Length: 607
Image 1 (cartoon, rainbow, N blue to C red):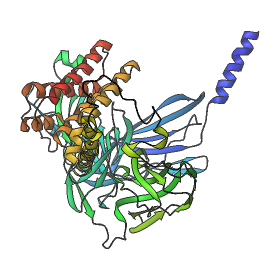
Image 2: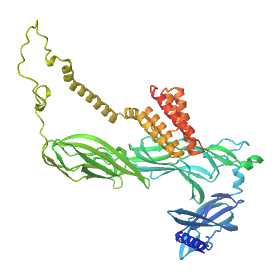
Image 3: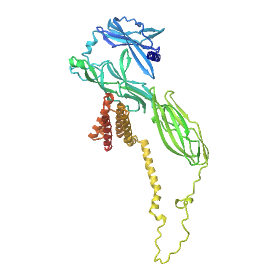
Image 4: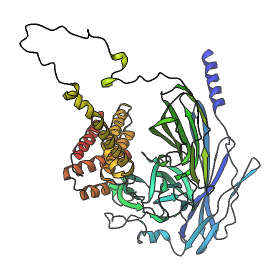
């Protein structure tokens, strides 16, 4: 009895936790948008939602140019559990078989469905009807937009309307420095396998930030011009134009294998794949220059930003340091934000410390913050005010320049310890001690006086100590020259940091092995090697393919052994990212060791 009550209670709790919503979506799709008079067209009206068992049949539009030759209904349900709550989604498909009456371009109007007093409608669909049968023509015509090798029977694989890749640009016109989001989607209505990049745009004249990069393809249903496709996002990038003009983004191309039908009895059961190549259309983007006569202090920041300032302590002893922290946050290209304009700080000694960045994306908009730190030392006691720190930027939405500034800060410097006066030979008074009497007695019976030593200025160590400031100045000049070159010479900066950044990424990849994340591991190793080659050769790492890397390595005269090692490592990573399989930990570590070895070999190359 108790067991029965517990079972009933569990079922009741599970039933209560199921979430039934009132939302309903209604879509219409067809199997194709171009048919012949002798063919049939399949129209599917899909109703999806939760909280219903049955729905009345939708009201179809007037279709004078089509005849309904048959229909049927099917349904499916999907359950998911999130935080202990079970949600249920049900889909009912009303399927109609249509026969065209005559050639022409016709519209299938909006279907209507009434549910709980609310009327839902579908989008209209354009259909092109031609004479004869399109199915017969497809066996002989060539594919105009996709290149593919011939099958074993000598025919090309027909993928028109079944497989394509598309570049979706958020906007085709922007200002210099304004974000443009580009998304690359893969659309399919056919069996697909072994997807890999053949070429990726170089994005010349754009600063590129990666928003999303698919490690595995995740397909979702989407209706495009009345046809239902399985759609997966390959890449999503934030482009920031660096100069004005009209630019064309090259196509992105994919190589993949599609499942094709065969008359061979063996292939009919087990399937046969044919390789094909698909690519996007070129994208044209117009970049407008920023308005003329920018206000004083403008250093190229574009976006929408705020600025704040603080100090680690408001009271300090004179000649003791404090840290001024300036933080800029908002939307835009965070990495290229210039240093803020500091007010005059004549009462302080100032030393630049460091800057750190933190970026993320929300709804495909790049945002984040950049923090600058300055070490300030008050020269004397007193009460000081640090005037506001300002930042001037261009706001693309308002199409105007704006300036923001911080609040003034008050610093109190209390009396500090007085500096001791230096005395002879750099010793302070406290460091001088009495070591004996003023006059030593004269030793008798001495044939001659011993040499009591040279003067201090004649000492080798003393002379070397005098040269130390010169060495320090020389080192400071060398470091300053190095720092200036790092800031001004992009190629030199990338070359200096290439090996260090690669080792850091490979260390991150090693940690992913222990977390049993093979897909993330291969992505991390691939990025480490690609970024390393990009830094060494001063080329854009984002969007660079293995073929482009091989070509650049050959131009720079890199040895064949190193080139083949790098390309082999990248191809292996790409293969296991898009076609994951079970591999042992030792096999995965072997990939990491290969990447480390080939990078060490590359370091010895004279590039």
